[in-house]
Image (tube, rainbow, N blue to C red):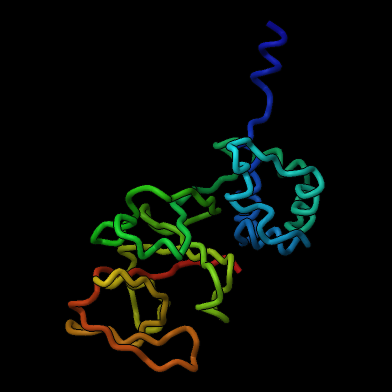
Length: 217
């Protein structure tokens, strides 16, 4: 009975990695952003590093956890409170790598996430019940967003001139831009790289448009 009780109190792989995700979110960072701030390889806390190629669970080292706590200005007591699905005081939203956002089957016609390939990202607070997160890959949206940054997107949130938005076209392209003008016939978009020219998209080409309400940087 004693041995069984001890086994039930053991920490799980998911609890430890979930606590690291929530620690990053509390600091306003993505997991890769927290790793960078801690002086670690940016991929140290990535989802792909949590399981080996042969399917074995990979655990974060005590050294990497200690460095992450220091980078987030948090204590081991805080980390202990973040362990467990119920900890952290925040919500999880669906997360998808930006490079996969154009794939068919990732969104419904209103821009809400569906299908496979989504993981979860924990945030201290989110707007709306249908928000989702995209992780930027590469430097296509620099300097506004860089590799590893996470943007929170809220389909259905009011959109105004000057808002940063995510737009999906009928051709399957997903792009991030600043909304300059919106009419019944077209969208005028300013690329995040100010050196690039404005782009006009016919309304008939647009599947959905949603506002970016938060970003980890």
